[in-house]
Amino acid sequence: MKKLLKNLMENFRGKTVEHDPSQSLCPECRTALKELSGLGALRCGKCRGIWVDLDNLSDFIWAPEEHLAGILSDTVIESRTFNPSAPRPCVKCSKPMENYLYDERDSLWVDACGHGHGLWFDPGEVALARQINKTQSSTEI
Ligand SMILES: [Zn+2]
Ligand SMILES: [Zn+2]
Image (cartoon, rainbow, N blue to C red):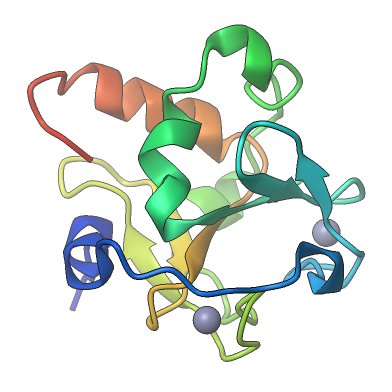
């Protein structure tokens, strides 16, 4: 069964989890994640993946384009982006994340923690997510 990201967001709307960003490791390569200042997101300098708290997702996706320079230009790794990937650990609770379909009308898969902690974008997926949302301006993410 396909799980939709919007259902997860509805379940956990407004529930935040305290977590020390300095303790955050990349779910892909275990490198320490760095804060993207002003964006409420963390980035892996090595594999270029991005962690976003679930509550921050909307703000992050719609950040002005110039704030996302260097993120939107990342190259998509198709095997990870358009297919469900092997479980990787949540940055906050280390439990395995699950694959969620970003939008039911598209084939972008993201990893998200089933406990509502946040989601992981592989390189290039942020740009795809913006495109998806742009075509649905009437729908809130
Ligand atoms: Zn990494
Ligand atoms: Zn978690």
